[in-house]
Length: 322
Image (cartoon, rainbow, N blue to C red):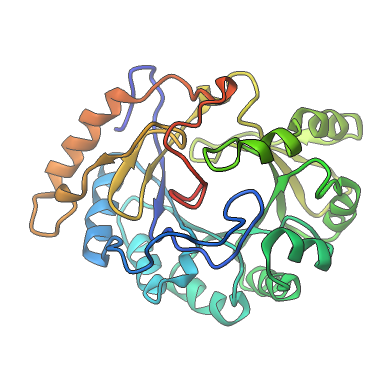
C-alpha cells in the first residue's frame, strides 16, 4: 500500500501522457503551447510498467491527463492497457473535448469509465475568448454522446471573477443535464501570478449559496478526487467544488502524479519531479519500481504552500495535468 508518513493512502494515479495542448486557455497557456512536441513522452511499454506497479500498491483509479491526452494517436491502446490492469477499477480522462464526437466511441470501447471535460462557459463567445477556440458546440455534442454511451461524465469550469461569473446559468443547465459540474478555484502558477490576483475567487461563496438553496453534501469515496460534491433532489446534475485554498484541503489527499516524461510528482505544486523513468523500462523487474515509489513517498510534504504564493515548480497546469 502507498501510504505516507501522515497516514494518507493513495488510491488514485494521475498519469500524464503528453504536455502538448492545442487550446490557449487564459489561465493556463494564453500564448499557446511553447514546449517541444517531439520530446520523448512515455511509451506504451513504460506506461504498462507504471500501471502494474501502482495497481500492486493499491491504486484503484487512473486518470489519463495532459496537456490534451486526445492528441496521442495511441490513446485507445493506453486506455485499454489501464482498463486491463488487474486492480484498476476506474479509468478516467481529462480532456478539452477537441474532436470528441469522433473519438468518444472508441475510447469507450477501449474501457473508459469516466470523462472530465473542460467547459469554462456555456456562452459560445465567452468560451472562445477563454480557450481561443470556437468549439463549444463540438464539446457539448461530444458530452451528449458520452452520456449516451453510459460514460460517467463530469464538467470542469475554472472559477474566474469577472470572466465567467455564471453560476445561475450553470445551475439552470444542471436541471436537466446529468453531469457533475466542478468549479475549480484559479490557482497561482509561476507563469500567471497577475492573472491569479485579478481573477481568483473563493469557492466558499459558491458553497454557501448551494447550502442555502438546499444542496446537500455527497459522501466521499476513497478513490474520489479533491472535489466537495453536492446534490439536490430537483436537479439531474451535481456540483463539485475544488478549493485548494480552503482549510485542510491537503488532509484528504489520495492521489499521486506521474508526468509525461516519467517523473513522480508528490504534489501538484512540488518544487520538482522525482525521475523514476529508469525503473519504468519493460526489462526491469516491476518490483524495483514498486520499491522506489514506496521509498520516495516519504518525501511527500504535509501540504502545498499556495497560501504563501509558492507554486513550486509548476509554471502552468499543462505540465503535469493539473
